[in-house]
Length: 318
Image 1 (cartoon, one colour):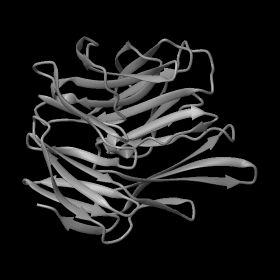
Image 2 (cartoon, rainbow, N blue to C red):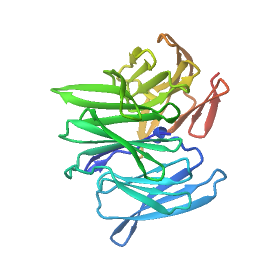
Image 3 (cartoon, rainbow, N blue to C red):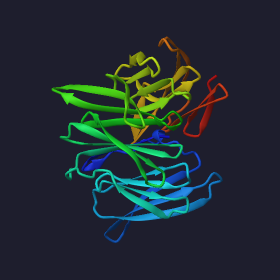
């Protein structure tokens, strides 16, 4: 599951695909008590039982934190406007609060991308008018492991593979009207291993770390991290956008859509196109689903079987 935040008075939302903590399920809600704004987080266990609840009073109307579940059973609350991250243990007790923008002047235009897996949490911190972004690596108890700068004014995406101590970082900047993207692979010491001129919002390492898959709304690419090359990249037309992508052994499964509709302020997709691509980029369409409109999509790959979940409806693709 993964998460992304952007502040420009308003905040973008961290994408759950970046966060890998299946033990915890969280629900968040903004509540009001008189004039006081409160951020409520409920953390549930596997069987649906409520493990603990956190209520955080927010100092301003602009503040909009987000919650990151971590694999020790705890949760991290990230407040981009305030510039901090609060670490809570599996009992809902706060164990650490850290500054993410230490040394930065205050600004409304700032971003934080988050990836959590296997006892580690990585933040990609960026702010307007700063030439470089900053990577901060913590353990789940809030202990700082390392931090280093990466080129690029705007953070776009972050992904980690703790077993191999690998981090994928994506940033971008604007040159006139052109968006210049960059993706780099680092080890946990901050040593750069490879770089490519592509941007991702979501990403995934293959299990052994040999490949990295990155994608945003219309573009997807595959990196060979051992040979330090881009295996292939592909751009979809403006009317086709990527919903989710993942590895199936050494192949890539991509789910896209070409039709959506806005109803009562909510976007629904009306079609799901499932493709399988090999290491050379050649692909085939496995299925096209247009049974009903859907809001959420989940791609499940287990035992070489592909299952697509559209809201609550499950479809075995292959």
